[in-house]
Length: 228
Image 1: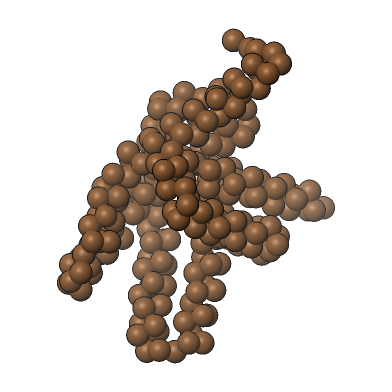
Image 2: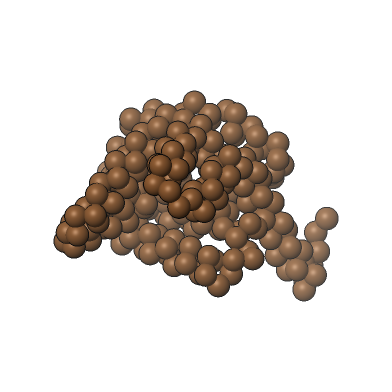
């Protein structure tokens, strides 16, 4: 049913709020194992327990976090394209249909993040300020690259190795847009965790995905148009 005037605008806003919040809730439900481990990790105070929980979270990520997050990107991509969405069934369809590809991407990204985090804490323990900042910068670039990988996985139909190369080209082909995405993502994360925590279960994932897709689509479109 369509409405005109003020009622029409209210209906559109309510519809978007519903879609973003419900999609975020579905994503969180699929990530319950990760959330449970992360919650216990934050409460742990013994180094042995922390290491076990950290290893468990890394092990779960390719099988749980990456497939569910790529499914969330797929659903939000439908929002952007104004396609009709059946949230739960579409989410499950994308999750199941892209599971193997998502798991491969997740395995590669998880190994990279594990090495980066372990090296960062090692350098931090050494007290080397210069290397510490180098790893922070590397982490920032890795965050942007990872967000682009999620976006590319739902917009570019290619094998994982080719996808990773194309993402690098897109990221460094439009550095200003890519870095803006990183800064915007960090600002949004700070805002919702420090000031708007009540919105976390409703909008954190879906809004961040929406922003990531908008930047990626803009960068990818510009790159395609620039090709002879």
